[in-house]
Length: 133
Image (cartoon, rainbow, N blue to C red):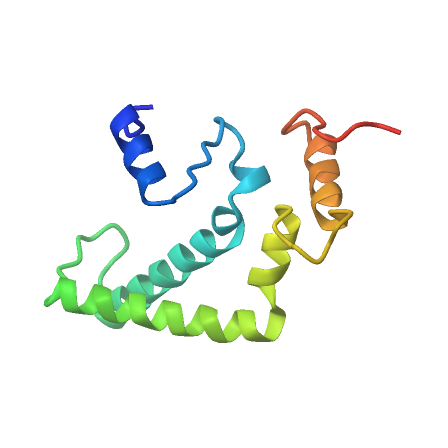
């Protein structure tokens, strides 16, 4: 990997930072933010863009000029963060996604993680990682 070097690893170690590298194809297994948050965040910002574009009366395929694009984009990002934070408070989606990836310290048997892996195995996305009984 181009962004991982001995210097980076050594510096992280000096700072007491533990770096865990993920193998290709492990996003659906171990990266909790990629499983839920990033997709929801991008979808919300995209929705705001299309909402803005539609309010201007542009035709389909017509290029949109967004005056103050940087400020407008920052506003959409802030709205997305606030929206998703409120949504996850009600659904506890962040907590359930972390449990799904095996990062729930209260789930000693890792039941949510095992169930998640099983669905991936059924969909032929990854090889089973847990021993079969």
